[in-house]
Image 1 (tube, helix red, strand yellow):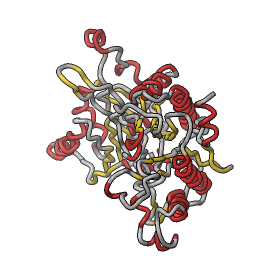
Image 2 (cartoon, one colour):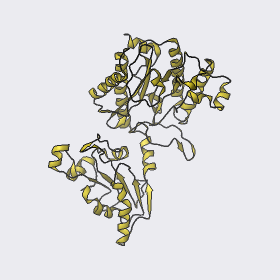
Image 3 (cartoon, rainbow, N blue to C red):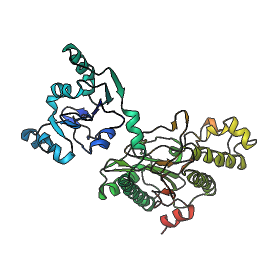
Image 4 (tube, rainbow, N blue to C red):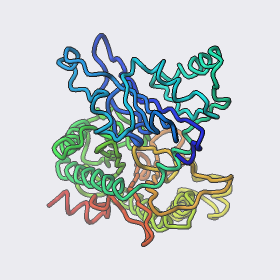
Length: 421
């Protein structure tokens, strides 16, 4: 409410259903911002925040009860029980919004809007303001985007959010263990995908937080490979990037392991280089350090390793200055994690690099990729076709950082022992 001000009003739009074909829709997922403020997962809803308003400071517009429709699509909360269940001061049928919303925005200095590309209702905001002016009523002069203020709130996770994210990480780590234990040469990538999703579902996580990546062989060098269709061979590494969504909160874990259960010498060398980079990057993810520090730390470790292996020439500082590592290090090391897998929140603040604070959750995911193509023709054949990424979810605390996903093994000896046990 502080961001809105005593004489402002905020309007937050939830998601609407998206047709797949005919009368079939894609599975509904509530907009993360709307869910953060309401915990409400039905489509076609709008939240209003109006400090000190006589009709109530919080109001929600939602689908009304309709037994005929509910027989087809399931129970609706309806305005009658919304105040009790959601804790709002007032509740209305969504069909009343064009008239009732005018009462909340009349006489306010500014309207703060959380725009939603998945909602057609937000297109009505200009019409509502025009209606007030046409009726010679006091209309807000300023329309302000609420996203920036709200996303700052979402960046710091409460204890309850931290507990939910720990559960999501535990389920995802167990799924990764299941994939390692079931992996055999001759399997298809989609079979490991199925193993992972079966663990998610059995543990109450109804969907992945993002499309699961199972990339074997050279597919491990494709950042967002989601076909998951190749048949794996004994000489392959397989890279799995998978995290479940539990009660809207995401996990995001990546592990890379040998299909045969045993790393080759070249695979082990690259893997342990990436693991060392991640270990040092996780240490750098601590209170007071910059968001960018884990990336810079891992970049130095990986680049120095590439020089020591003869894959890059020259000195470390020259290689970094000339960005010679970019051929092999193609993505950043971290992103925020929360209700969205690539969660909201700025990585800089007031023009300065952002410092890490207690309650923030970010990934640490260095990767090194040597695709077997003409771009890498100058690299020794033993390294080509190897792609390794190791990713964990890190909670920043006052006692240091906590690896939420630490149940998924990542040391080479531990992986081999698990796969051959």
